[in-house]
Image (tube, rainbow, N blue to C red; front, top):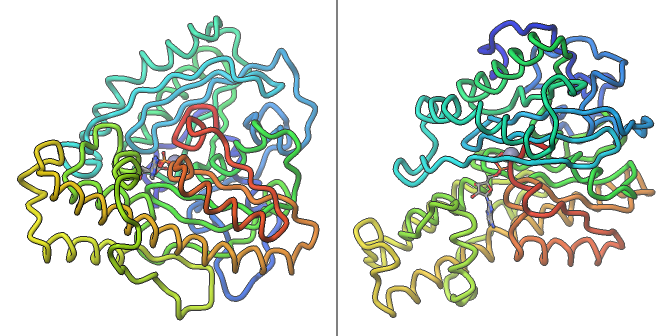
Length: 390
Ligand code: KG4
Ligand code: ZN
């Protein structure tokens, strides 16, 4: 558990995310309670507006104030991000430093990521403050991601937040990373009201959630092995793509050149009539396909591939993407039906998290929303991927 590895926090963290635990979600088809397993040490929630992140406040419909200034810090994985957001939801600045660890190691090595965060954090926070034209003494609070994520990386952000909070006498808001992915939609779409259905798709998580109210979530589905972002990242690496800007974007780009019906990958979990996800099997199918076609993707990057070889890789990328997203569509269609049975007043389907910045994903899920009379709400790509705002 992430939080058991975190140091004791000073000043005491008043966790926006403790709201998740305020009302026990109604049990639903033996699914787990959302986020509860990730929030082992959540303390009792504060009721003071200052102790909630601005996203949370906006979601709560609490009158926000123009003079309230929040610094947000996010270091849960490989991006060091900070932002300054005003009480009325206006984003004053965003700063981000992305690590290229993925390229060399094919994944995020926690110790190296921690060091990279430690090197970048002061500069990133300073840039966010400078771009917003404010200093620490103007702030009302500091919000920081406290999980889920890599504990070594989370520590860096929490340490920085504590330092600023201590020197300037500010409260700290602990932010749950996946809740933030869901609720940032309310910053960009002021008409988004509860209840709504949310699909959260990132490098580490796939979640289908019925958001009934602030802090009242029912988990409809989760991944039983790998998340979709992990599958994109691995497939991109195995295809020899240039993943300096991330595996997902690289694969999405190559897929545009390929035939999505050329390779018959199997859609995961079709026989399971629930809303859970699985991407481990699809990853293996991609690996086996690459091996069976004798593609030397480990030795030959796509930039040096022959035209025929490039076409084959593009076909694999497009076919992988079609099936990966078809799996999302299957589960989302069922989740919409479940959610509408529970809350017939639902009008919106929120899709957020890094993978939601993919255009093909957005288009296909928009069909699902429209087919069911819902409106798709998806933040702009810069707010789908990890950022300091949420
Ligand atoms: O939310 P996020 O920024 O970080 C985590 O919380 O994990 O999501 C990162 C994931 C990575 O796996 C990345 O490859 C994926 O989102 N991603 C994409 C795209 N942009 C980012 N996947 C597919 N297509 C994209 N355009
Ligand atoms: Zn994320």
